[in-house]
Image (cartoon, rainbow, N blue to C red):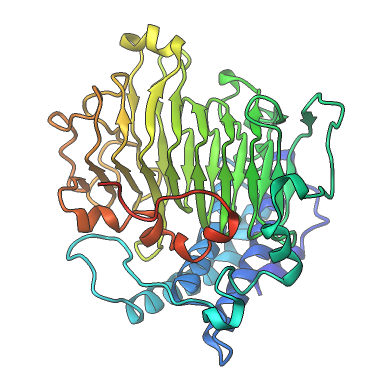
Length: 442
């Protein structure tokens, strides 16, 4: 087994970066074992999950292995060789399983459009769970969600004196801590911050000021910050790998690699995200709705890219959907926008997938819209789409002419990237109490 083989070298002496990458791999492999176990159980007689659950968990397991190997980039030696050897077979097996399951479970799809279009099965009937909450919520949790906010008694209170600041490097909610809710006093009032970066000789994955991988995670009214600064390059403020995660009314502030939407299904509502290079990146199935995405003034000779989506396998049901948002610049960038180009995204991996739907795009965005990663890489395999965006930067007349880029003209195509269709939010978001629009606004 890959995890057993990888764990065999725990006590081997390693350089700092290699140790960081190795520890990433152990954590990610443990997560993958959980994803694969849940997938197998969902296919058994109990049938506790849907086809979309299985596709999500297989996609996440494959992303985990990809992230593991990314940490070893630029390194060499026996540890890297050992991990490559242990992961080779399991990566192929997961990819093959994803391909087989994806093909066997397909409904009718839009011809030529690399997206998933499945109807989600309910976990239980309304009679079984009262029609209000998903089946995985216990009675105690249902009672909590039914309480008015003023009556909720917190399990932990941080900075009760009103300071509102909690300082912790690499604060993490692990996969075993499920259905946790973090509630602050509001944007700019409650802070979770850190200053780690790749300059500390650690992986990008490890730089997060806050990370959550336990399913059902909710954050509300909090500011997440990485204060490392632009010269330290990759420095994550918030990393989310939790399935059914919700980030509501939060600020996420950094420069390069601000927000790592790593894997699984996620929803961001009424959030403000600040950054420069690839400041929203990862391979989750994620929808941003009613959010403001602020490009900041980068370092000299840099270009801003809002997204860097890293879908590696064409059967992964992942991508970034930006719906009814504001794509704007901070005042310092707006004042010098003629000196810095800002783009909607660039393809980190071969099947990168990002769409902008019915969003305001300001004049700091370059008329070409999108930026190459490296020459012609992924230009014919990516899926980048724009649908009914507006504002001075929303015109598509001078957009890139890549084979994978498309101006979406059909409502049916755009609708597949909504909360209801892309992350199947109507089956799990109502129980969170967070407002959402299931379809397109017309």
